[in-house]
Length: 175
Length: 248
Image 1 (cartoon, chains in turn brown, green):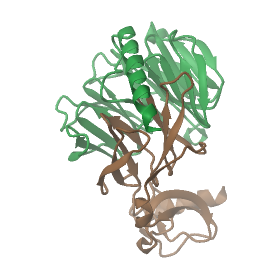
Image 2 (cartoon, one colour):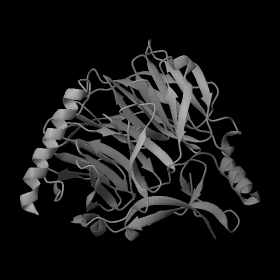
Image 3 (tube, rainbow over the protein chains, first blue to last red):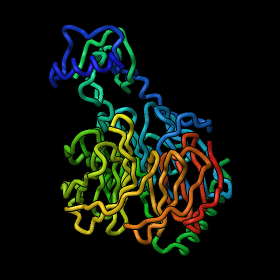
């Protein structure tokens, strides 16, 4: 708790600009750490058999179908046309968090890209379009909070897919 | 497998048309589906609206296979949700609700910002019904220990939303309504309210089949996002949801 307070005071003293910290605060500070994925990992889209839900995400209803996001993994496709609604397929979309449908087309994201699927056959959705960086869900330079310390982004490690609060030995960036 | 698809499709269409005759006001045949109150993607007419943490993005989807970026509108900070209602968009941030007009769908215009005087932080999802808007305002210990509430706003004058009622809840998340029943996901369960008189709404029940995050009332089915997956209820009688199944 003391560290948090020190961090806060230090942050206030440092002002509001984003930048590298010349004199890092004490050791073991609470800071946001980027989680990386490679650009090629985002291309890894496929339809698989049903799987159990582990990190249940957002839901979307469309006709007899329900789509539920599996956080950062993809989308469960549920058919409720029968008395006992059940999963019929899993659409693997790396780092997907959102879902919406119009006509026979499903919109989701893969980190910051919007990906469009043709779901005329919900057992076999196919990619019809990818809009690069159309949904800047995760900032590539800093975490979505101000007055915080964070580990500076190293673009050579890949795309930032998330920011996680951790206690790390030294935080070299702040905003 | 393929030979089963046509009978299933036929059956689905039959069920669909049956449900439609039962619910003249339903959106069942509409080509757009329905999202929850915690969504960042929303479709209104031929447009897909998305919100990131700070901006609203507009895509023309007249050709649904080929979204075309049309506009980006700066909104504020810590934006979390978007909810389409008639020709409006309700955009929830951690502190306020921004209301935009999409009369001109490619150029959303800000109409107002609803602020709850009782809550400094944690204003999240919002839904609207006629001239009333409902929002859950979740506080946590970082926010001074203020009470979380279900807030009811008069939006007759959309440029000046006025909070008319507040109901204390434990730790609320998403919400949705069917007819006069409002469903609110709360730490203590799924709370069911009678909103016939929205400014004196009454809790009439609560369900405890899971840990509820958000709801989509969809015709006669209440689709619940729970931590373990999905729970479905029959809401033919909106005040007394009947469990259909859990999908984990």
